[in-house]
Image (cartoon, rainbow, N blue to C red):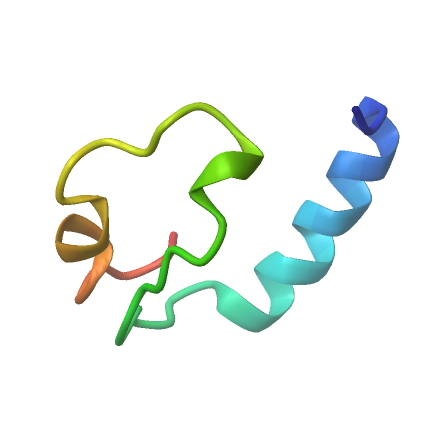
Amino acid sequence: MPELPEVETVRRGLAEAWTDRRIVSVEQRRPDLRFPFPEGLEARLTGSVVR
């Protein structure tokens, strides 16, 4: 599990590239990497804007 400072560094880097961008598609490739994703997650995220 990554440490909080590492997570924050990644978050800042992603924020620069993704803030105010629209999600055009979502693909779940490895559902076995964590707890099961909620039903319909891809549809709920598609079209959303990252804030």
